[in-house]
Image (tube, rainbow, N blue to C red; front, side, top):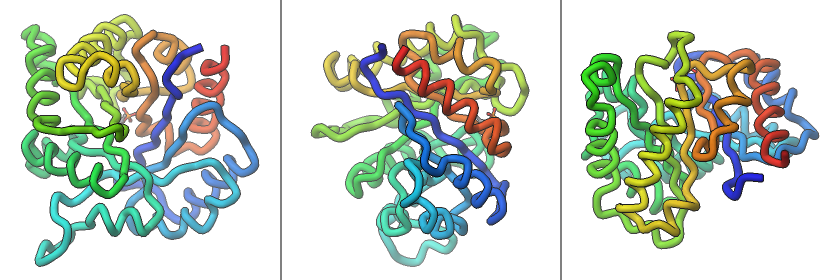
Length: 254
Ligand code: PEP
């Protein structure tokens, strides 16, 4: 049995609607999981999701968080607002936000601090692209993302997750092999150990994301340093996502 409680996060991106909220949450009602499970819907549906949550163990996550607390920042949503909407975690620095919305490591660091100060669990996303992998610089890329994204952060007993999402695996159907995932997660844990110390690093969960589905879940999660999954496309099918969560839960007690 793994020491760290597994975590599965659904990232709906700009997809879904009220009907998907209803069907997804309904499929979790009355079920117990040996894992933390969260859905990150578009902001507008968080309140709708919250009304159903008393009947399930699901958590609400956010796909992003503002680096600002309040003020003239059109289109932003603060950590405090997310907390009020019932959120318990937020993704930070997803590769789509880095590529399409100009997010950088320095901004991610501010967001991690903001999330921590509002008791939202930050899930910092890191990952290399195809060219970087082919050029053999995956570790350099991850090292920079981690060192800069986590600079000067004192966890003070608070929790934090890292999501390793190789960009070449996101939405492509080509998930990292379990071997690659384990090698990279082990490397990430070693960096976390340098940053926070070995004891803290051993307690932090590192998720894998990128074309996760019900076929590859068991093998990926079977790796010693893979503590959870970030699921995009497959989470838009409620039955498929439920199966992934059930498999993760079974593995947690195996
Ligand atoms: C994601 O973008 O976070 C993701 C994991 O997507 P997919 O599962 O569709 O590859």
